[in-house]
Length: 328
Image (cartoon, rainbow, N blue to C red; front, side, top):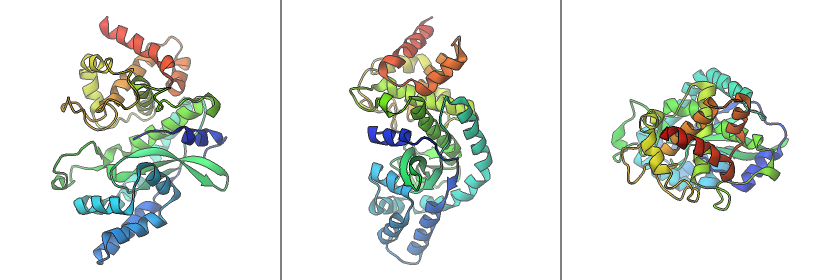
């Protein structure tokens, strides 16, 4: 859900000044128009083609990365028309929460050694992914924005789960949308803290990354989000705290494997552990980052580590110290 390519990182860090936080709801409104066309009898694919054509540059970047099309959105709409029909209403819900999200973003920026928060675009896609930074071209050059596909983060206690016969399938709650915005901003700030494209090594490349590097990158973003806002995504952190040793014993067997090569840790549910919350690797990584910060003699340097450490050789000592503490 949160992957960077080398090109994307280069674009993100090539701009000296990032935009102030702002919220864009244009795509939600365009999607609402598409829904009204469907209600009037227009073919769903045709309606979604209009939505995709007129959507924001952030949507287009998101769609290119995750291969989102009018057909793929229409397919998901056909399966869950009630769920998709409620998505445009998220604008009002989020507008009411904008001040507290901005406050959290401001606190996150204060924690970061460099960088600033960026614009946030809310859109509707086909449930392949939730939030991710996207580079877009503006009059002032290429800059980063956050794209959040609300269709992957919109479940509520009132959701008609008959449209989800196989369960939530890793989809998050609407209440988690603010957390996702801050988490994705933390990733932008992590890139900035790494000193620019000349010093950047993509941990998604098997030659430079591994499962442990992913856990630290995502786990530190989770922890930084919590420090800035008090928010976490769902309650998987509670499971990670209760089953910490069990999770570590399983993860240490795969932590040096290539990035994302072992399913169930950073995408969806674990095939061998159906009792584990979805993407439990995020919360295990958060436990490692939390331990590193709380046990550091120099808190200022430890905070910089949470933003800047990413390469396997750099993060291995964090895992070693964490593992030793679990054994003591």
